[in-house]
Structure formats: structure tokens, C-alpha cells
Picture (cartoon, rainbow, N blue to C red):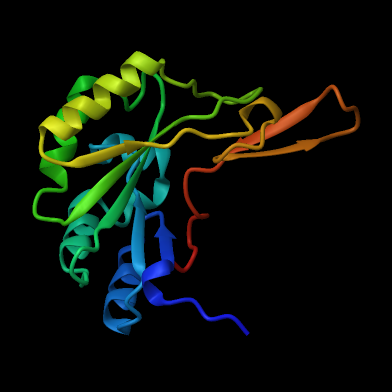
Length: 181
């Protein structure tokens, strides 16, 4: 049986505050990744409805209290949706939101698929967003996905219905509402 050290395990959450608190109290010592996806409660609630119950202020406070070992950080995942959450104003707000949290931001350009209401921001907009966040003092990386051409990239679930010509893709922004973590 193979065992993995806690430092190699990351728990990813859409930001359910009670679950983050329980994880913090558990003493497991695993890494934490939080899907942020917006810098304002109104937009985050539209994208991630559970935000109405656990708004940014309470989520970020739980993150500030999350125990981190030396040289470890919380990762904030931020899916960039073209024209929705990728404006320079969003990028300027982000460092202020995570101030006081040892963290990094993982920027994930949205993976488009047929029938989805969102679009991928262009490369220059992603680069500008990253630059603004880093100027604000926060480490930011850009995750490039593989498999976009076959709807198999991060954030997409693809399947075929009756005919191979008709494919359905579903965006995955976070766990279902009511999920444990």
C-alpha cells in the first residue's frame, strides 16, 4: 500500500466555510485550494450560488485562520471568464481580498465548449490580469489546459448523445451546492 505525505495532498473546495474550518481543526496538514472566481459577492453568487450562504468576507476570514506549515500557501483558483470576471478592476481588487493570507493565485482561462454561455479571454487579457495581480504583491500563475480540442480540458465534461455530431459540455466551477467541502 502506498502512502502519501500530507504535503503532497491538496483538498480543493468551492469555499464552504464550515468545511474549511473543520479541515483546519483536523490537523491533517494537507494543502488547501479554494475556487474564488470573482472579486465581488454579487458576481460570485451568480457564478457560485453557495456564496450567498458563505460570502467572500467569511470565506477569506476562514482562509486567514487556516494553519499553514512554513513555506506552504493556500492556492486560490480563479477561472477567467471573458468579459465577466477578467477586467482590470477585478485584477486590482484581488490582491486586496487575499491580503494577509500566504497564498498564490492560479489563473485558469475558461475552456470553451459548444452551448456554454461563457467565453475564454484572449491571451493578452490573461497576461494583463496576471501582471496587475502580481503588481499587487500576489504570486499568480496561469494554468494552460490540454485537451481543449476534444472537450477534455479542465472544467469540461463532454459526452455524446444520440449522434456523434452532437456533443454536450458542462462547465465545472465548483462542487454541487450542499457538498461537504
